[in-house]
Length: 253
Ligand code: NAP
Image (cartoon, rainbow, N blue to C red; front, side, top):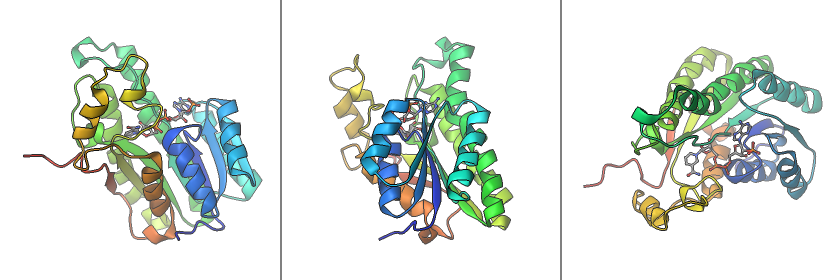
């Protein structure tokens, strides 16, 4: 089994979905965790489910001071930082680009891309001081591999993460810090299209047929790849965009 014994990890978006699944996997692998998201009650629920020595800090990833505070908490509580899974994100306003306001464009970019930069900036400094580390991001098949009408800002943000990891990889590689993106396919979480209150009844089947496996993922299937990339088992993997997308990115004939 992949081990994170002795490692300290920050997971953002840990109150739900993929981040919650990653918290369970990382804890089971022996990591000490700092969990991040806005909703305190949900973070407490996840921490209570896990048991053990889990730190939680509610806040908003759009705020650079929050990124700094999460790293400070990891150092104060557990002595340093080895792993960060910058996973928090949301689709934002869905609209054709010709109808999208500047405010909605900026909001989606801030949540899904600028927040990742804030995280990496502060996490990297702590990891360099520690002698190495692993930084991960939740990118998406939307944008990184596929175009879906109405999701232009989200697509731009999620494909922007791929440029971010390549740059982080070359800037931080000499100091032993790796940076990678998970290019995630449709996953059954509260964010998935079919779970929205106004969802079209056909959206689940439409999502499923986009994937070669003709289904969407369980959050745990994404968390398993995050665990691998976070761990020393992936010691020669950096600057990569790893598809965990059930074949959604394959051009189908
Ligand atoms: P989810 O269940 O809705 O989880 C999103 C998480 O992000 C929640 O914990 C949420 O917590 C947190 N979050 C959102 N905005 C935040 C903010 N401003 N500050 C702090 N935390 C914030 O969705 P998910 O599917 O697990 O999504 C996780 C990541 O995977 C996202 O980046 C998403 O874009 C990506 N992804 C998802 C899919 C999919 O099909 N589900 C596909 C590709 C990529 P709070 O609400 O408590 O703040």
